[in-house]
Length: 75
Image (spheres, one colour):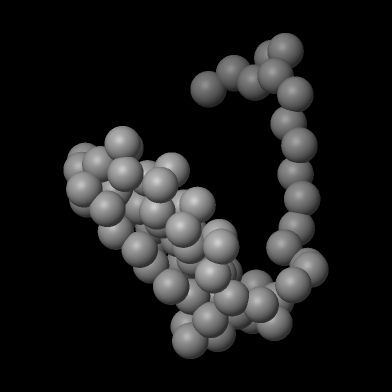
């Protein structure tokens, strides 16, 4: 795939590793979403986040996603 003309920004996960992390994901389109969730969890673990600090929240679809994300962020 050509990256001509595309700006690429790369960063690292360095701050707040002692915190709590929530991954909000839909059950809809599980073929794709499940792989994205696995990648997110793997990335957090590889950067030293313990599994006990990661919470996975599943919702039916895209409509519910911002609602649950707001609720999770408030806790």
